[in-house]
Image 1 (cartoon, rainbow, N blue to C red):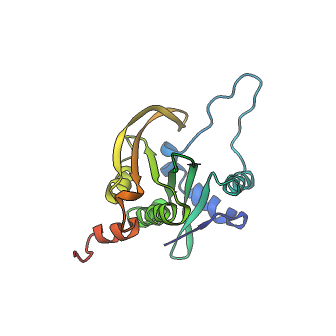
Image 2: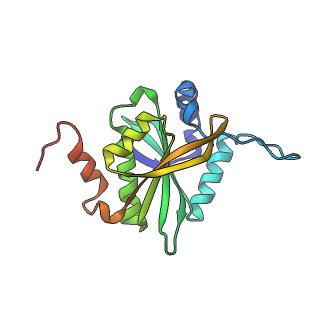
Length: 193
């Protein structure tokens, strides 16, 4: 499993995985709310999306990654909303190909991302916001030991409507040994020390 920055040349693989998983991802994907009168809202093209992600990364507000498993692109993980000052926090969003769901790919990707945020970037807090109905995604953060903090009513526009999200969070001092170490120790069949 590898996390690496998203690239323009990922377009074909990204689109193929996204197309094949359209029904699997639709209930959890962000959508554009109705545009105010006089404005036109549209989904960006892949190139526009990558340009935006790179611009935000260059500005220090985002870290966009693709997830690779066994050498092929199987998802995306984005660390966004990076805030400095007295907060030093961000939030993580992710999606994965249904064909590899349940194999520990996304928990491993989230663990790597959290370690990078805490150890290399210098953040203190990470949040993951998940629709209450999204059991598989909730299991990811629960397996990793994120703490449930509460409900954000009508938090994000998802699948055509404003949807409630549960907030899960973790701070750097809660995982002094690192998230990846914790995750490997918690996996079924891992040696217990």
